[in-house]
Image (cartoon, rainbow, N blue to C red; front, top):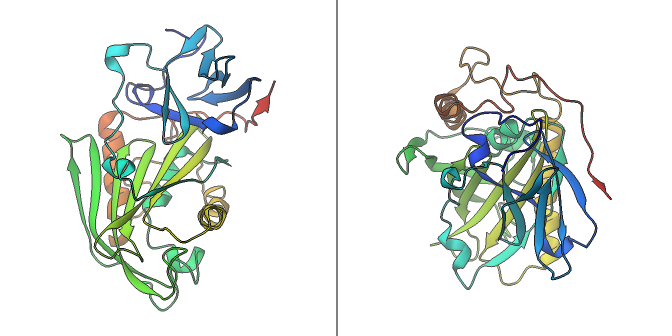
Length: 299
């Protein structure tokens, strides 16, 4: 598979799968979008199956976590596998898909923001953080899966309302997992099951170097909360982040450590940037020209 006029942005980004939209929101009409600067379109065919096309023909399709995913590799032997997520198969977890949110920011910035605990008291005040509890305790960062993933462990932060089901503030244990350049997951203390963790995933569809769509998905140990309330809670958190993300400058994320001065709280961010640079990921990073903002259309 090749796409006329499209050049793979880097050797890593095009290998991975990316979500486009929720399967149960698709119709027979095409939805046009961009993925890594490539124009693509997707829909349900007459048999009720999802299909994705570029201008040159069909693209690979996979349905996972209720979303339609595709891949631009063009080489079936080079396609990266989906990172394992055994929690998604546990029968007592609720799959909560929180829609798709357009962000005028680099997809790399969106992932990095997801890793940042230091902004909780100032951006998510009264929910994920509050003054005077602003300290980010020292945590550990390591690579796993032969260097394909980054994990930040031993993360702890006081949160007034860590989840919709939480009735009081609590010290929340976090584990962050960067499973792919544009995919990250959070394992956090479950208010209902203290010995287990809720899982919140953020799958990013990089459209252009300066625009993306974020697809938050949760795998929760929460039997009592209303589904719509769970979605609204997570969307509220993300929309608070979007205001910050869309005002960050430069829009592309610098990978050079000398461009922005990190603190001890930024250990996961520093590891993420070094990991991206070592792998050769450049899409959405400083040095790649930006395209004008784009909007999705239905045709």
